[in-house]
Length: 404
Image 1 (cartoon, rainbow, N blue to C red):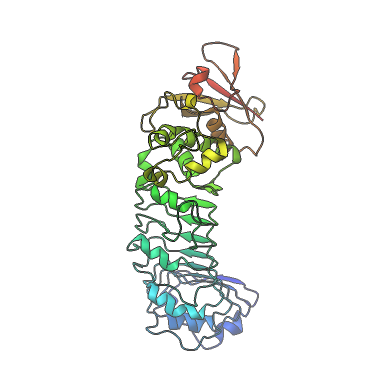
Image 2 (cartoon, rainbow, N blue to C red):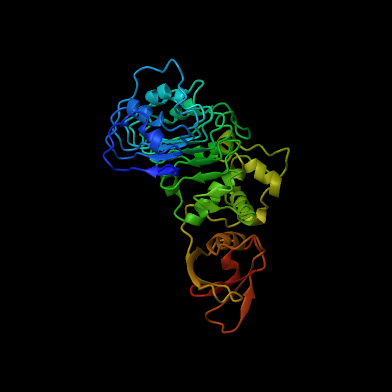
């Protein structure tokens, strides 16, 4: 027992600390303890157990219905001085109680608080300043403004807000094209299974200075576009620094394709709102810029969309005809053919972006061609990244060949 570093007594009916110093005498080297789903009824019991573990780094006391202190501790004890990971899921703790206990956790980096009926947040003053990961999933927060109260945790890198009922996100301290001072270190944000209904909240995420990864599945704003590929492209184009979307890496080729497509898809809207190829006459309306804050930047990056690109541009809401195609890698026979349904209006550039992810190909240059099911033996190269599949007369049942 003296050599044990990691111990789990989950669901073992543990209710108290036992005899004084018994744990420290028998298990002196413990660093990680799982006490979840036991019969611990108070935070005092947790402290009594932890006080016997000198180098405690990880503590899971989830699924214990506990009473927490009613007042803040006046003297900071050294019991949790090395604790870096704490899980308090399903313990009925409130955010106020978290802040009361937090002075005891001077080195805490990860805090898990799922399913606790936390509805109201308060600003953490001089506590939780070392926190890097915070999970508030399955707590019904009362309004998106609550997030502003935890927005100044200086080291917070990962914020998990799955199923918290939030319906909007905004950072009023920064205009579009500028970065917010809120969440200065936030790299990973998870907001799936929520009530975010407006694309404006996605526009706001471009203001986060460090954001690199986003999970946003199952939100009402996603119902505005039926094609999942187009939906992904829109999010990528709206958030400039994003590198991972819904756990799938965004490669440079996919970003370029997404931004070029975005510029073209909304080109007619840009013209109708006062956009112009002549810089002196280019004055798109405030409404257009609010809906598409990155559009001027994309025009600077790639040039304004040409008139020829915008002719016959289908409205985004129109359902494009889907082609059922077989994807093969002729030079990699070990890879099995894959069947995919793709819109005929999808550009070659976007098809490449999809294939990078689908086939998990490293960052090599892809070469695409196709074989018609009607013309035996004839192979046609897809040699223009900006052309849609329909330009090449690809039809249902044809085979796309991928080489790299």
